Length: 425
Image (tube, rainbow, N blue to C red; front, side, top):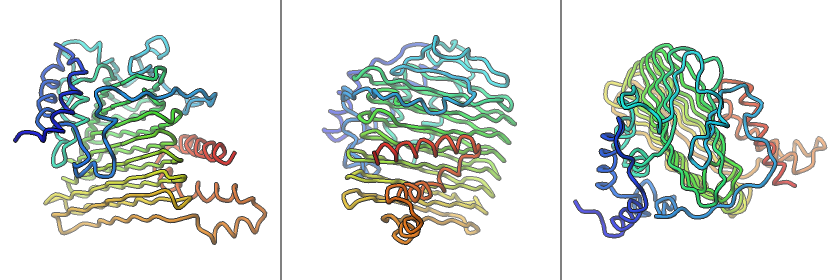
C-alpha cells in the first residue's frame, strides 16, 4: 500500500539528505533496513505511537540548530574508573579515548570493522525484530545510515564499566550512532553513557544477553538544552539472564527514549527505569515495549518525571505476555511530580496477556508536592526550597534504586541535586 503523500514527501526529503554507506559485512542489513523504512515511512503526528510527541524536528531533512552548552559543570561519571570511548558530534575520537582493550571484552569501531565480523549476525537483527507489532521508523533509518558506533563482545565479567562519552561541538551536527553488544554466556558488563552527542542525535543499541549473562546500563542525558534526541535500545534475553537500564534526563528541548525488550529464556530478569527533570521548553517521552515469551520471567518498568514551567512528560509502556509465558511477574509504574499548573504528564500504560498464571500490574499517577511532607520539613526549620528539593529527590528514589551499583546511584542523585540547586538559584 502506498504511503500517504505527506509521509512520502517527508521520507523522500530525509533520505535525499543522507548517503548510504557502501560495501562491507553490514551492507545486507543496511539494504534491508532501508527497504523497511521506505515501506513504513518516517513517523508523523497521525501515527498512534507519536500522538503525544511531534516528530517533525526528528525527521526533517536538516537538523535544527542547537546551541552548545558553555557551563563548567564536570561530566557525569568523571570520578568513576572506566574505559572511556569518546565521540564528538557522532565521530569516534581515538585520541581522547582509551585503548579499546580490556580483559573479557572485544571492542571494535563500526566504521573500521573487518569484512568478516561477529557483529554481522546481530547488526540490524534485533532492530528488525522490534518493528513488530509497532513500527519504529527512526530505528530503521539508523540501521541503514549509521556512520559510526561500537561493537562489543563480552566473554566474562568485565572489571570496570565501559563509558560511551558524547561531546556536542557543532550547532548543526546530526549524529547517527549504532552500537551492538553481545554478552556471551556467563559474561557481565556495565555500560555508561553520557553527554549531549549532537544538535540532533539518533542512536540504536542492540543488546544480546546470553544464558546466565548480565548487562547493566546507566545513561545521563543533559547539559545542552536545545538538543534533540531519539534513542532506541533493542534487547534479547536468554535463560537466567539479567538486563537493567536506567536513564536520567535533565535537559533537552525534545528527547524520546525507546526500549524494546524480548525475554526469550526462562527465569530472565529485565528492569527498565528512568527519571527526568524538566523545566520550560522541555518535552520528554519514554516509550517501552516488553515481551514475555518464556516461563518465570520478571520485568519492571519504573519511571519518574519532575516537571515545571510548562514542561511535558510522556510515558507509553506496554507489557505483552505471550501464550505459554506462565509465572510472569510484570510490574509497571509511571509517576509525575508537577511543580506548577502549566506542566503536563501524558501516560499510556498497557497490559496484553495471553497466559493465565501471571502477576502483572500497572499504575500511573500525577500530583503536586505533598503538602503534609512539606509542612513536616518546614516545621523542623528547613526553608521551603530545600524542603521541596528533598521531597523531589525522595520522589525519584524508586527509579534511581534500580541501579545496582550504589556508587553510581550516588552519582545520579548528585546530578539531580545540582539541577535542583541551579533551578533554585
